[in-house]
Length: 375
Image (cartoon, rainbow, N blue to C red; front, side, top):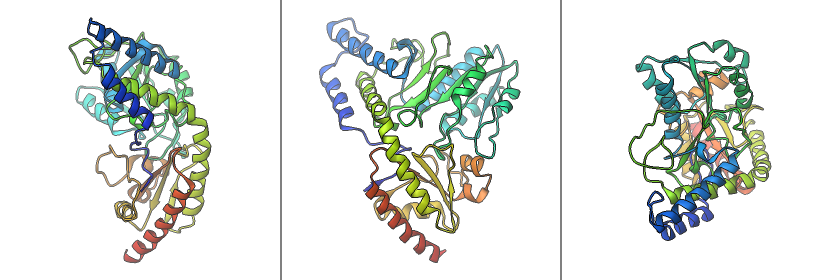
């Protein structure tokens, strides 16, 4: 099997699974219980939380554990909107967000909130001056992903954060799901940040919302003591411990992995750009972990399933996107509807090998020519 869909989810690392299993077996107490088993679990929970905080450069009390990035995004957006709606009901976002961003915004529009879209320039990057002009006295939130999950476009969120610091009543939320563990991202000028462990070889079902301590969000889940007053529920200690392990290992290997991925991505671009009806939807602002292409004469799902017959797995749009035929993110990058309708995503990791890419290219060539003849 050749797996090239790491942006959808990653396999769990053996070390991470071992941490999960050990915690399940040896720390059976609820970390909120007063007996000795609970105290032992609470100590381990505190240790894991401090480790995560140190890795991210935040305070332990700024960490809210969630079920994943989708819940984190919902908590950040709805939580800010409900808590600070007396200040205003205007929110700014982009056409390059995950569906778990657009979902909450659609909900909020029904509650009377106004959602504005800041458009990208020809390179797919948000123009900072345009964004600043859109900020109004009633703007309470700007939500922009650091890296788009379909194209790999990386936005200058650090610079955006510096601009938004000038507006005390406007908060800045960043979905860092596709950047954490891949490229460096500073949380210094970010008010809220979301991510999921399963994007960096952790287990599914655990994620975080980083919320700076002076900010209050209205909880989505009420009732019951937990690790924070902003999200109720029994602390999932084994998942928390496994998250800390996965994050540490990914950050330790980030630089070395990036060098390998850059070489593999460039190899793919060089080879695939030679096909007359294949468009490379990638530029200098895209991280190399995600390569988006369009097979203009072949339906993307047809190519996907053809490669699957060779035991090769890629994706069309984001795994969480709706079934729209046109990719919103690819259209924002390319300004080309045909490219947006025929896009495929190849996503790499530090575990991807040169031989896997060679095999993929061979199989792609076979599938491409066979399918082109049929079309």
